[in-house]
Image (cartoon, rainbow, N blue to C red; front, side):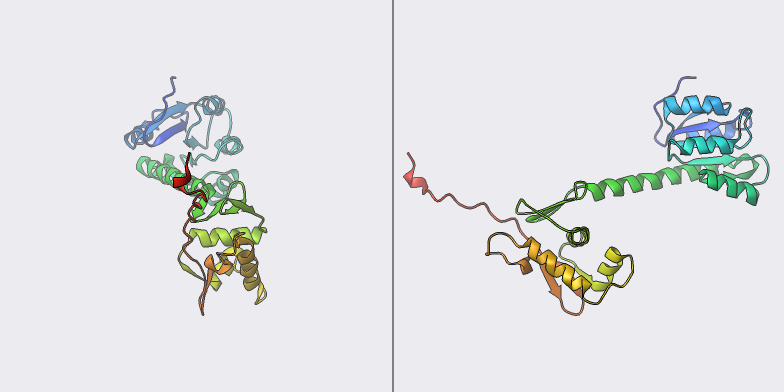
Length: 257
């Protein structure tokens, strides 16, 4: 069959030999905006998966040439696309454990209620999209006035000058820049940088002191405290650090040619 490019809900590959019984599911998926393709067995599903690259899959546990569990493992070795398994019988505990271990996101008994299956796949896709957006956002360079960090390159600059930071200093600066102008509690910083483990009492203060020193511009006009401010009895705050204006030319315009 010809494979479409995908509907508003994405591309869903329905793998079943019970085409007539699954027609209600295919209709519901299309109604909810999915482009649907149907494979009749695991071998055909593998070929269509490689050609079409589905965004989601609904797979019968019982297939003519293989187990839906085995197909699930095959898909998982190549893709993180949401995949649910459909069984005509009950979704017993053993089947559920085996399916989850193989990488399935859910198991639906009785062939699966069409609306429930479609809604579940849509929710899984929406969650994946939010994760992708968050990942992309976290990889974008952060700028706060004269400070810049490139998360993807793990580089930090002040006034365009590269500065060498330890991993903890980099993450500390990243945290401050993500919440510029906000007072961040010491406990929140420790939770973010030490995963809730409590370091020695003066470790955070030493990290901040070292970061302040490294952020100090080459010019003595701007002191380290311009960037990171101690908030008494609370924690620390990255103050607004406006971009330093470019220096004026020392040559008076009246002395032109």
